[in-house]
Length: 283
Image 1 (cartoon, rainbow, N blue to C red):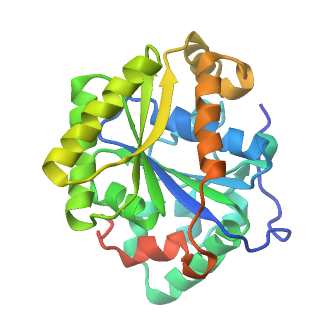
Image 2: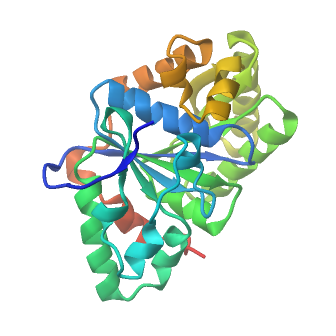
């Protein structure tokens, strides 16, 4: 699959962008796969999309596409490359920013270096409609910082009790300090819509009972052999099997994203500025 370094960002123009973190309380729930395919579907619908691989050290997004980035954000921080040198372009014009462990190093930059880096990052961010962030799993400072720097977050979980407990714990940490933060729950690998509805209802009931918080419903994705085959072949399932049940489920999420409003233009702040400001210091 063609997945090439981005050679030019001069055509990118400012837009009303949205930053959405895809996160999870535990690993192994299929989060990175869903981020990648959501981005591809948005791009197929004509939106300009960039993905930030913030799953530090794992580079899951490019692995799922059968590619290994030559450079990542660490090379930019070291002054050896510029942002346009590391950004990769995939199908439908999708952009991917391979971060490596570079995101965690942002907190250690001098003010001058940070200003220079953010200027380069804004060149990418300002030219897209959607910035999707693939965070790591769990409740580390880095994960929390990426969540809170985003306009909203999709929490990916599965029907298993451990996955649901970890999803609850993740949202609890954020909601206790930022009660109005917008989480949306996406249940992956369910049998059908009925099971997804039961899982959504149970998790929502617990959050309301103990935290007084009701997350949004981002939908569900069914178990599908097409997803397994796509991972083996390292081709996104929405490209390999666009009419598969899992692809149709994810299309519903994309319809919801396209049908909902983003942040008001006058209040939009750079995702990277918010990462730098905290409130959780990156470790």
